[in-house]
Length: 379
Image (cartoon, rainbow, N blue to C red):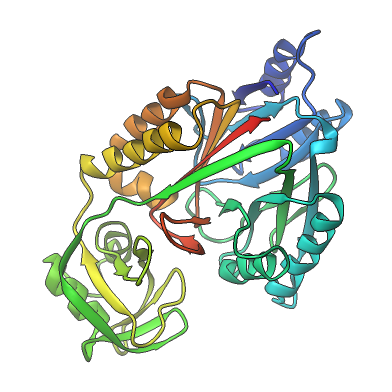
């Protein structure tokens, strides 16, 4: 399997890059597209569809190929994968029956492949992505490989889209199913944020709404440990600071902690809504602001992946949390370049609203502030 990565801000730029990529030895069958809201998605879809290329697409908070980051562009990974080795499913969930919908797709996948693996992206920030993972697990089993990320919308958090050749949705999912008997797929989900202080207990929560930690309002506890000043409704950057620099780390008996940044404040009781569920009674620790060690941890984990499981690759796909780009600033470029240099094959990725993967030693889960690196190799 061969791969090529292209990027462009307009349909014309993308067409030129596509035409230059296709030759007698490379005729892509699959395009993985990570696109800003700015390019004309309908025109891009039509162009690729006319070329007979299947599309797995999501909108972004920023996109990149190899060492090149985009600004209002579409980053595309082109693959000439045998069409018998993959299939794409698309569905919506207006009734919020996420688990049921994901299970239905998994059943279809199992009819086609004995050992299916899944790449998934979804739209709508209200989507319970953990239920999507559980739906797939219900059918395939806990061993299943699933990687992906939530679509973005240039940090507006208003309306995101997933799309395929002839459809798109702001409340749905796009699923690329791979035949693991033919395509080897491995990944690493790494955060790298360091914890500070002792374990604390979530003493009151409902789903993703955390009220108190050690019987103290979670906002007050976070501000205390983070040394955050101006904790008032007038501080418009307060929530962004908490989410990217001082997220909760939910501890588990096995595997790395789950990052659960606060995303929305309730000033009436100083509680906040996290990116994912935080069950009452959970053990949590607070985080230190990130430094270069965060980048080094991601690169180190992927070097280990190459050394132990995936020495060679045909292509690399990156789902990186939008919060990483905000928190790390210029260091995010070093992270992207570091990942590219590990396998040195065509790579495409985007800054997502959440990440789906199996953490080291853990279960399939929704992550935040995490880099999910996915490596593909034809067997």
